[in-house]
Length: 173
Image 1 (cartoon, rainbow, N blue to C red):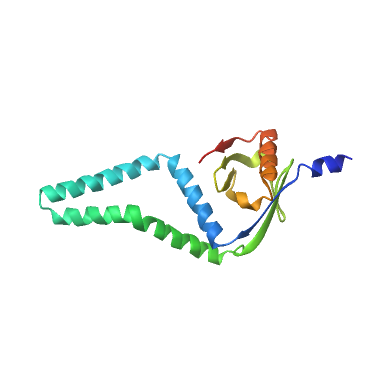
Image 2: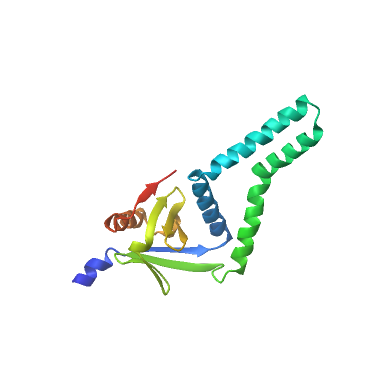
């Protein structure tokens, strides 16, 4: 009877680790980390300096400064993600996990993917976003798309497992 009780608390996530999922997870982690880091202030200063450079260049006919500021703004708003995307895809294509179906189970002892197990004590926090769950562990970070869970009840069961394991669940839109 005991095994039936523990089986009911088993949560399964199954998804294909493809380019789309790799890019989505990387983008979500990057944006979350950027929003919660001092680096965003450095970025704001960078943008402000470039914009003041544009204004100064136009006022003083300093076209070299205008060109430099334009390149900085172009990099920040258009090129930065494209460079990052190329690196992510290069890393993805070299990975053994590329285009593999991943099945992960969550139970009262932790997270299980293949032969790897992550104990709940090694999970530092979980961030729930619209697209999925970002798991931060001692050694790495994992992404589980919400579509990888069979139902809303499975996602709720995961939230209950996290609460029982005393893992901080942060909800973010």
